[in-house]
Amino acid sequence: MTLPKGPPPVVFRTFTPSTLLPFNGVDGAPVYLAVRGRVFDVTPGRNFYGPGGPYENFAGRDASRGLACQSFDEEMLTKDLKGPLDDLADLNEEQLENLQSWEERFLEKYLVVGKLVAEGDPEAPSS
Image (cartoon, rainbow, N blue to C red; front, side, top):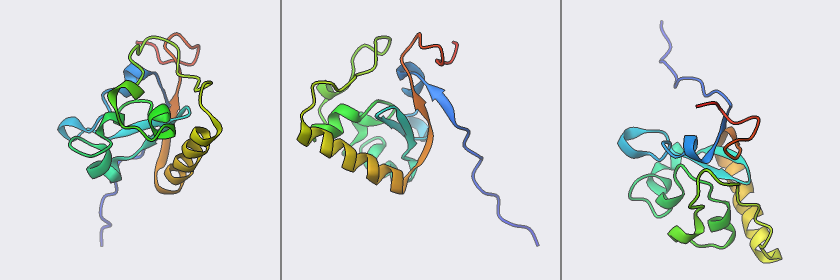
């Protein structure tokens, strides 16, 4: 008797905004997004986070600001992928509570597959 093959193991790794971008679900790619520096594999929720889903803007990106502000608009995304990570310092208490509840939901439902650091960070993967 043989057991069915499981999915390949997921290795915890360090991402930068540029190296996270390809994980957007396009052409069957996994769907990852970052929340407060943690990178989640949201591939099981592809219909929400992948191409054509209501949260597709967040695929392969840092979704922290958009989730905190309950906005799925493009302007919630960091434009300069080579710049510093969004420190979210200007968020108010309500927005921080929103973000925390999203983060808790992701921790319950999805695997953490890595962490997000800025380009040039000593932990950033070399290109």
